[in-house]
Image 1: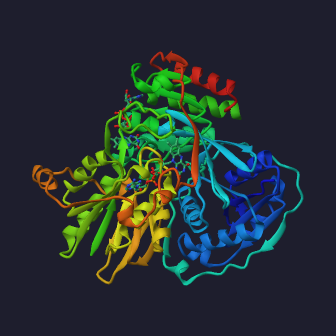
Image 2 (image 1 turned 90 degrees about the vertical axis):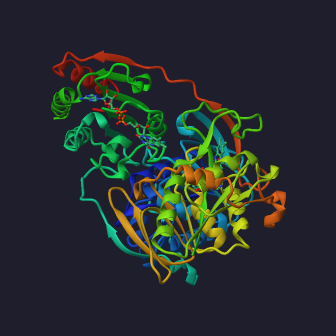
Image 3 (image 1 turned 180 degrees about the horizontal axis):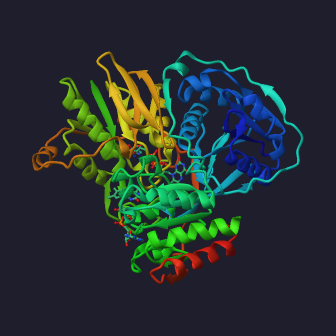
Length: 324
Length: 263
Ligand SMILES: Cc1cc2nc3c(=O)[nH]c(=O)nc-3n(C[C@H](O)[C@H](O)[C@H](O)COP(=O)(O)OP(=O)(O)OC[C@H]3O[C@@H](n4cnc5c(N)ncnc54)[C@H](O)[C@@H]3O)c2cc1C
Ligand SMILES: Cc1cc2nc3c(=O)[nH]c(=O)nc-3n(C[C@H](O)[C@H](O)[C@H](O)COP(=O)(O)OP(=O)(O)OC[C@H]3O[C@@H](n4cnc5c(N)ncnc54)[C@H](O)[C@@H]3O)c2cc1C
């Protein structure tokens, strides 16, 4: 029996979509119990909502330290949740800040981490994770060995969230012993980008991105309109972030973020290998580029050879019409 | 202040990769380079060195003998010295084993600050910085796009979030990992390249850093690779030539998106 604990992330008490996806994955592959670990302000409210996706128990810690200090209070809480639940495996959304928590926790508990899984399978009491390596050039299957809980990071959108029709999860409040060292790194300020109403890039099912072909910063307004019509996030190539047209956190590629959305729509991006290393695992790739020879066409499921400033406005209009 | 810059030798992103029979990456058949993100950490360390007069920077690399080239490259940016951990038993190390080896190499060293890349271009797990901090029992300020070190030993970093940042403050000693947005790395000067050849490089095996062969490599890893296979190249789909007005292209794309149920 493999009992799985899912590290659930939430925003003010609402679990993130990706956490529901991972709970669903745990329910689908597991042959034991599925539990949730939820930390920070609003954790108890979030616990009310995890039963629907298959968690029967929610381990909750609302300590203020979770939100006041970086990483380490959550590490202590996760260790406590693993002990309380007796979990054999911990699944988490492979997002940077969460990866930090899990990385420290794995070292503390003498275990290891498989990062960036896109598919999971149970083999005895071990989870076998499929993942892309070398920016999607190769596929591999990895597992955590050893005695401690197996830590597996799951990429957003690898699974569809499906209601498991469960009742409310039983809530267990954790008592977390915080060593003094847990409060060494204090969060003194949080600066959010102006709310765009768009999904977070690493979590979005659809990403519309722009590159040097936009020619100017204003081009991202057009990219934003297309993203909004499709309910997607906005991404960028390095040429666009280097030019200062959009923040670096939107950069996709080798030195930026790796994304694997269901749809990646690249506009005015040539498809350099360093860019492809961040997006070529997208399930469907669409391209608008005026150069028919651009390398990105070779990985596109559909390629439009044309001027993005001509193609995108009627495209947005038509999408909105069909939706309406 | 003594700063450690971990540096990794990685296969060039543009090169074709191969996997050995034992499922480790064939790092010898392809051109190897200094991991790009480590250029940003080196640059940040150099800026600290240039802004005060007490800074020494030491590169730290775990890798095969041939990684010496990468270490010399790192030194050519103006770093003072390097430590390279080389041992046949480190082959196949996962992130935990890598972090354990890097931490062990620092056990008898004096250091105040570790600055490293947030990820490497081959495995890209983003695990090593936090794991290294855990082994060393110090705080980690990861994904920094701004770093400030005060004379009082305080460290402040803006950690990149989606579109914004969070500011985190701690005291030395600490680990910091940096993202590309933090700076624009310099090019090594000719003088720097020549000087790098003569800078002290301390090569150590596992015994010298107090680890047994069981604590590194495949044996010391907590993960196993069961299979690694090249992905068949993707076949390109339809290419539609727009008519110059945008109408043809837009229609083809809408039809495609409807067919694929994105609309
Ligand atoms: C170490 C290293 C790391 C890197 N990391 C990254 C990374 O993380 N992410 C990344 O993206 N890059 C990265 N790069 C840079 C990468 O090599 C390319 O330079 C970059 O991706 C190019 O961006 P682009 O495609 O937007 O620009 P270009 O290559 O200049 O392509 C612009 C494209 O726009 C098209 N175009 C122009 N006008 C129009 C129009 N009106 N309508 C339609 N199409 C038009 C052109 O035909 C062209 O194909 C890295 C490079 C190095 C060396
Ligand atoms: C197919 C395959 C799958 C793998 N999957 C996993 C997995 O899921 N989990 C896992 O733990 N390992 C895995 N590995 C092993 C992984 O390649 C190594 O653990 C690797 O050394 C860790 O580096 P990283 O790129 O993940 O480090 P990152 O955490 O991405 O690197 C961050 C920074 O750490 C520093 N750094 C990293 N390595 C070194 C070094 N050797 N010397 C000096 N500084 C360094 C650099 O500054 C770098 O910028 C896999 C290997 C293969 C072949």
